[in-house]
Length: 138
Image: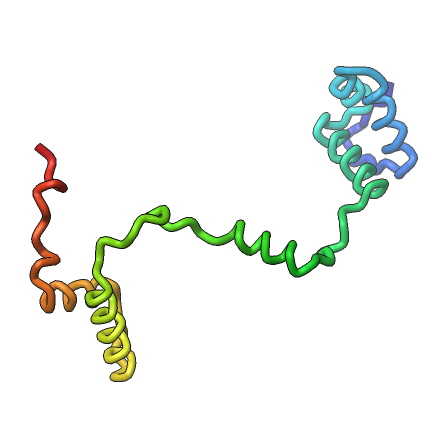
């Protein structure tokens, strides 16, 4: 059994490999091995991961991909919309007005917010402010 005398001990690669092999010779042997060598169990697990990383290096990034693979990955990253394919409740006329106002504000150098555009749309289309009875809770 190895006992430290208070000073830091540096293990060689061969010593680390021997400790890792001994710790994983049979199940549930990491903690007893760690106690025997006066190291933390998580340190032995780190050493094991480092040795495995040397033996099985990760693939080179970025991995060469075909156009189809890249488009599939891009489609997976696309944020799903809230409406889930349902038609919009806002008419094209209102959408066109909002885009038109946005362009006017940007041409004038005015910082545009969604709230500003919503208020303009409500002024232009007062029926937007009315909530249908079907949306009210009883």
